[in-house]
Structure formats: C-alpha cells, structure tokens
Image 1 (spheres, rainbow, N blue to C red):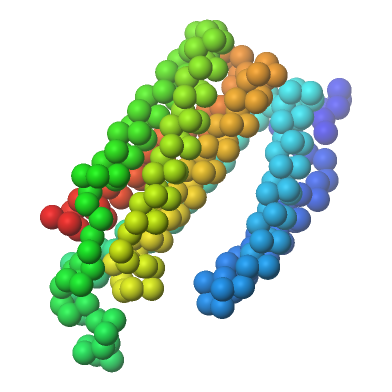
Image 2 (spheres, rainbow, N blue to C red; image 1 turned 90 degrees about the vertical axis):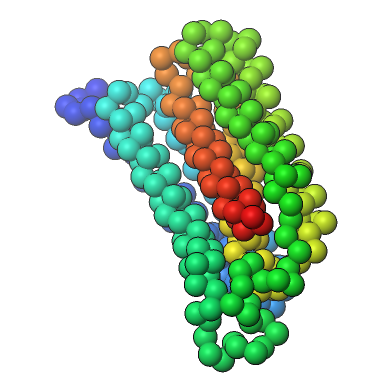
Length: 274
C-alpha cells in the first residue's frame, strides 16, 4: 500500500496470493473441461470452477477495499484500470473471432474438407449448412433474444445516465431491469438448446453453433453476475456520479456482449438459414 511519503500517484499493491491461486484454479478448470468434453468426467471441472469463483471473489473483494476503504484508485490509477479493461475486451474480441473464423472457413469452402472425410457420415457433402441438419429458425427465439439484448443495452445506458445525473432511484431501477433481461435471455437460450434437433457432435455446423453461442451465453451469465455485484455495491453507496469505475466496466462488458450477439444472430442464425 502507499504511505504518506509516497512521491508518485501510482498504487503499488501489497503482495497478494490471489493472482497465483486464481491462475492455478483456472488451469485445473481448463484440464477439467477437457476431461468433461472427452470422457464426461465432471469432478475436476467442478473443483476448478468452484476454486476460480472463490479466488475471484476474494481477489475482487480486495480491489474494492483498495478503492473504497483505502482510497488508492486516484485518477492516474483509474486510467491504468481503464486500459486494462480495454485490453481485456480486445482479447475477448479475438476469442470470438476464432469461432467466426471456423464458421466462415467451412461456410465459404464447404468442399475443401479432408479427403479422408469424403464419403463418411460426418462429411458435409460440399454443402453448408449440411442438408441433414434442421436449422433453428432465426425468427423465433433468436429474434426474441435479439430484442431482449438490445433492450438491455438501452436500460444499462439509461442506468449509467441516471448515475451520472445523481438519480439514484432510476439508476437502481434500470440496473435491476438489465439484470432481469440478462436472466431472461439466458433462460430462452437454454430452452433453445433443449428443443434443438442437433447436438454438438453432429458435424461442423452444430460444433461451431454451440461453441459460439454457448460461449456467448457464458459471457451473458458472467455479465449478469458482474451487474448483480454492481447492484449490491450500489445499494451500499459505493458509486458516485464522478467515481463509478466498477459499474462503468460492467457497462462496457455488457455492450460488448450485445454487439457479439448481433454478429451471431446475423451470420450463424439468419445468414446460415437464408
């Protein structure tokens, strides 16, 4: 922590176990995810996921304490935190770019599959999406979810405007509405998966479909939790019109989730079915 003799505006944090603990927890979770996908074993993935959640909570608790109790997040520190969040979102953009790359690669060149696949049951036969796949209509649940996420983008923006105007009542109201819309979106996504006639193992289109939309759904859940934490912090009076970096980051993340969904709906749902 800084002291009264500090001659610079930067925050030099105390030694913390959470970066190392969280990294190892994420490694265990990743190994568990591989075991889950290949062998259906859930124990390692469950342990890793719980460890990631707990270590993240404890780590973020310390960050909040540094801001609220310690007062270490001055203007210079906030600039650095903003750069960090921007870089994180850019890494997420690259993550989803990989799934879109896989989708468009086979969509534009459906006849370029490996020779050993030709004639096999899992060959797509030079057509994309494969003719034996019954696609989900883009004008049903996907279109409804698009309207829900667009509405949530409006409510989070309204909440941000209310906070900057020191309108605490509307800030809490529209922040809560955004969380509810995120939960509704997740519910419809789960219903869509339940009624889908194809599974992730049924070929390249189902694989790219479930990986892209599934990871987006995971990001919606993370974003909803992010906003819920902001709501709890708001009830405790942590945010002011001039200092609300935690909520601002949650809003950035939520808008990113909105934009990714627009691309998913346009290409993986509507364009693929056209």
